[in-house]
Amino acid sequence: MDTPLSKKDFVVLMPKMLGEFTEEVLLPAVERIVQTEIAKSEHRMKAWVEERLADLRAEIVLLTRKEDHKVLRLVDMLRAKKLLTDHEVAELLRMEPFPRS
Image 1 (cartoon, rainbow, N blue to C red):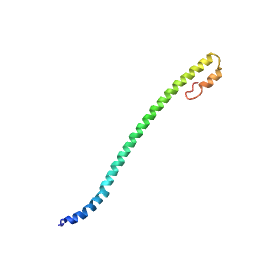
Image 2 (tube, one colour):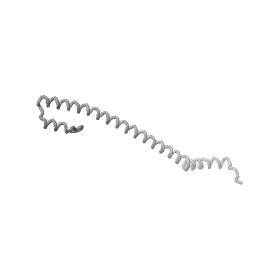
Image 3 (cartoon, rainbow, N blue to C red):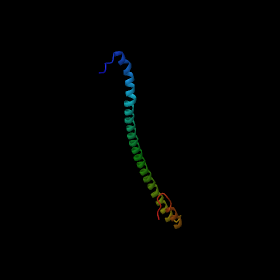
Image 4 (spheres, one colour):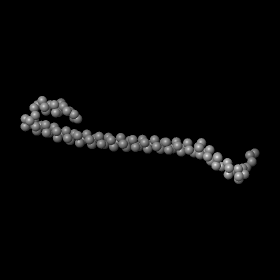
């Protein structure tokens, strides 16, 4: 049978045992938990950023289409006043970002 530890032995061994437990069990477990939470946070952050970027892209396309409609109207007005030839109108309408045939 094991003999019980004396108080002196306990005081000497306990810090060593706690240190080993901390290094071998506690710290690796905490590290796994932290890494898992960091990965989850990174995933949520990435999803949020991608969603915001998609919203911004949609807004930019919408604003660009509005401007494109203004340009189309201006081209029509200039053609009606015979300030643009049919060739020039066709060339303008083929231009990006929203080419027309």
